[in-house]
Length: 345
Ligand code: DGJ
Image 1 (tube, rainbow, N blue to C red):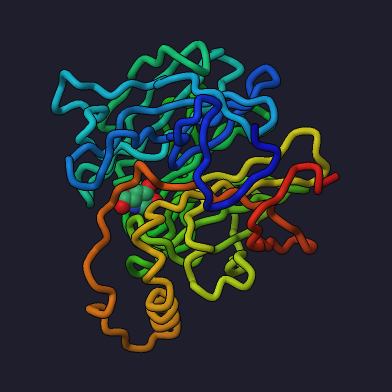
Image 2 (cartoon, rainbow, N blue to C red):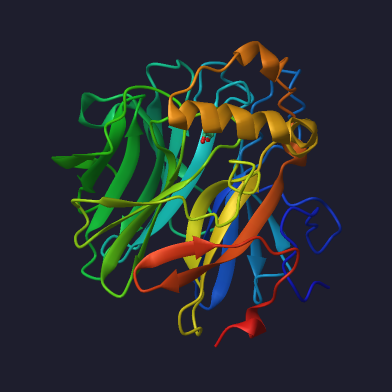
């Protein structure tokens, strides 16, 4: 049994197996926490298996997670399916629609670098079965990458996504949450990667909207950015990098996937991040620091110093869950080797 979070250390489920919920999020259903994400159990970076569906875990305390199985299975029959293990399916997001009483899941499909699309599924229960209702969706006619879905208190839902590789879009969802309405706003225009924002995580605090994002460097980590606004559609003001004292310029060697407000706590938000390539990175920390310092200061940098791309064995990706601290409206994330919920009111 765990009684604390240990960021960056191997996290096992209640059966003693590595948790496979990468690029994940937490949703609360009837007082139980469900953590779902990409199941990478068969991925080794060489065999062409990108994913093995979406796996989901249940917990009552956020530390100990029981495997509830694969809720969206890989499609082993159809090579062309967006759910085939060779298809680059990432970042499941599930929201509940009070009106239709359906759980709605959006998936990002990255099979063509410049033409990323969405697959949409619905279910009556969080654990499925999920029915695929749309595939190859290009929201607003755009190539759509990393994203987050969020539902307001009035039941209206919003979709924040990376318009590949140019800017971040906030789009209104239709009443059934399975499409966009056509209303949208544009944020953080950037010339190109690594400055373009990925892995958007939206959260709300004291009526303000926050977007926590990463830069664009594949599975290699980079500095995060936090922005704040008064409305869903902004305008968003960039507050800077929330990872305090992160000299390595890697968001403590992680990429935030989602932010979870802990029910019953006064002001506790957890930044849930992935450490995608735990082995490959350690020896590269110093060079990363140099590279990002150069990139962000506009100095020249010899990219050959980075050496070969590490093997992308994401089956052993770890999790980095850290509490968010607020100073007025500012957001700070500090490194902790270990922490517990009872440290917070
Ligand atoms: C960065 C994205 O945030 C991830 O979801 C994943 O698509 C990787 N790129 C793949 O390189």
